[in-house]
Image 1: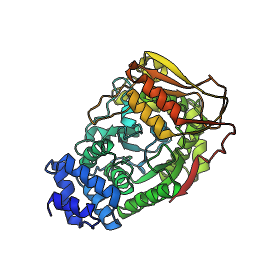
Image 2: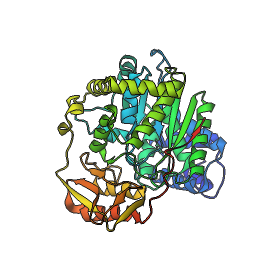
Image 3: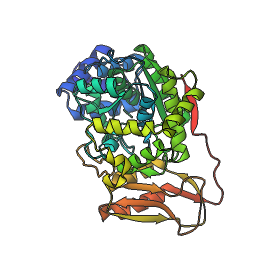
Image 4: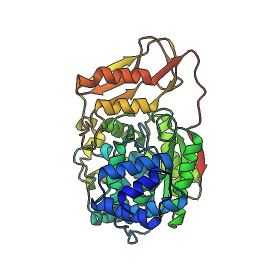
Length: 434
Ligand code: URA
């Protein structure tokens, strides 16, 4: 079938044949199916979904659009973690060195900001000199020698997803279970892992707003992993408010380093520990998650986690001094505070709204070719359940360009809800799916 016929068939609720799906993805990767055709297909999938046969074929075609890396020369169980995306989600920045410091080889291929969510690659690139574009030979060497390498998708690794990810980001086709599941699993299965921990975010700042959708997404990805012979564990974690207190690329690096020094907000620390503990168990470095947590506490206390981060930064071309001296990271020129309009409590945060405010400020992209500003972002001085007085600062905005400031402040104020009664806190780790 021609691309036009396939798009039309999906638009009208038809089922696509695996061979047609493969041909469509191959043609998109090669550039003969145009971006606008793929965008139309994604929108059709958004509305019509895919059954498990279609999804398996779509994910496999994405995986096989490039090379499946072979890390068999690195001993041990190679384990990665991937998040479905959130706001203030800097877990990878601390989890990768933590797991690597505990002896788990971590081959990590990450993404850039997507929609209202931030991306690990953008955060890493705020470290001066940090290179996420290493050739696969170097990636293999660093996983073997340093126990960790953090890169972006290359032309060799799931190139279909690399193109598609950028396209979905700007065509409102991100929050779609089959597209998310195939995107994540194609690149994760291409990176040479033996096992995977998934952080499936749920709440107002996640692509999945409801627990049942997050659970379906987790099960869909676990199913794709099982089809390819990989052990996958998923935690459903809270994204009803940003994780930690910092949102924005360099700001999140600072909070991640603080975590490795045992000095970060409790929610961020807890989610990171829970996910990393699962990695240690899958990687056979701990028999139970309790034993794993003990090991994590130890590598934080004895400084080996932060040393591992500095080593990763150094070998990937970054300036390791910036891990000790935050003034070497990009700094915004000015700050301004958004203040509480009344006395009471923060009763909730529209986290997607905070993410879109960060995009408007320049911390994320509005178009595939937008340049982000690594220095800008927010410090959340108040989070859900905390009491406020009228006029008290709630969010500090770190900015360089005042042009969008009023828009950003208005978005933040609209995202925060205030009331007389503190909300009941929901668990950070909602569920474990295996
Ligand atoms: N993360 C990914 O890698 N892909 C998606 O589609 C969403 C989150």
